[in-house]
Image 1: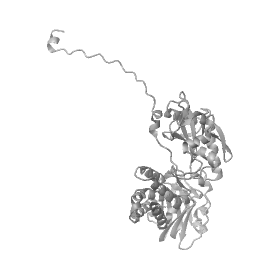
Image 2: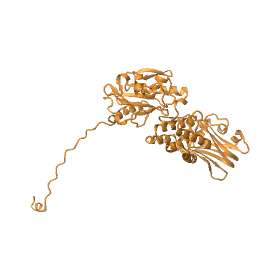
Image 3: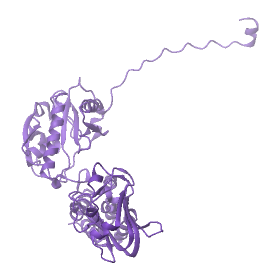
Image 4: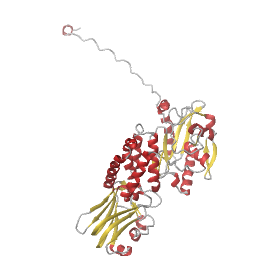
Length: 459
């Protein structure tokens, strides 16, 4: 293990020990907010973002040691909104029973700064508030959470604010740089920002920050960072730093979730066959069928590849437009403006990637990949294979395809594998064809100017 990785792992462990509330971002994670004994008539929890607030419980610890039932008898619960029929199913005892969580108790609609508030009559003296997130998946929606308490006749007082906590975590990580061995300090300092963002659940920002470092961070440095955050932090949050950043990778999916997702990918391929027969699983999806027989644990999405003849689509933008128009007309949600692919999903569902390629004689290729590396005959017409018992479309010669894309070692899992991202090799396919512009006739030359003597003589 490198000195950099050791330093990163050590800092993560120390941060989690110093800031135990970070574990609120884990599935079913708990946030404990201790306060000096205070008489309150209300406790308010909100999220400083445009999201839905989802909680299993909001427990209150009192100096009198009041039971859940006694607290329920003295409390009223209100919320900024209620999602679906959750208001009708709401039970105050489930919300206040922090010792025995039992699924979602509060679920608001997605809105700006959603909240839930408990009011007590008569007021109670409390020593702490306990929040519990949802079980079974990471609740990053709650990462900007705030807890406030109010005494009778007094304004609300903030006793926990995630943004303030994130600043404290950032200061701690910045201070840790000085203790890192000299040979690892420079790369560690570059990673301090992404590390703070990952610790505090700002995963999109963390991924973008690491991508920005691609010219100044070595491959070994990136691998050290990914190994450290995965092992010491993310896996306990049912997340993994994949090729797409921190996401809920397939190793955390249930069997039923996997089956539903595979069936959805097959349904998109089946629909696209009415547009062209040249569509099948590609990239990691093909690898999952041929090599693993299951969704790849460190992967997080499935890929389809589709190819068009020159008379069907002359450029990649034209190919993407055909896919978008065709699938949207059939009720699918198509998003993204990526160079080589589009995201396709059911409304509200997990997306798959659909990559478009163009035939060039007897060759075909998709970005990312090597231009013209695949023979038409090795790709189509399609073959079929099974993934968790579901029949899936594959390239005509899937082994040749996988060897071409992933190299001769394709049969050995490699979580660190990276594609060749060479957009310039596909630049002519991405550019629209030149449009003929009609040039207007040149204007007639101006008549020669007449002097004052010519005007006087009538010339």
